[in-house]
Image 1 (tube, one colour):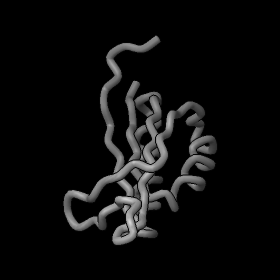
Image 2: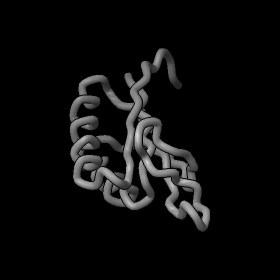
Image 3: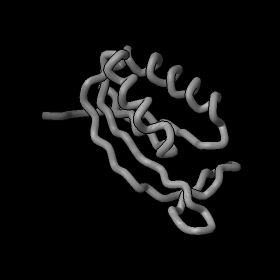
Length: 97
């Protein structure tokens, strides 16, 4: 099993959550109003007057074979709207209940 942490501009949120089920990814946890700034050239997402954008985050645990499909999909979403910002990180899940 793998944990995939997706950090995304709030504008991506509804579409990505809707599309997860079409990839047979049912379970997830999400956080709204996550603040930060991209490590390369991303715009700050601070929810302020100067930087009004806000991120959301989604954590899902999926079977290993679902990860490539999910990452391809997320990369496509990021490329369609590169200025919004979207990142995904994959971790091994060693145990779970």
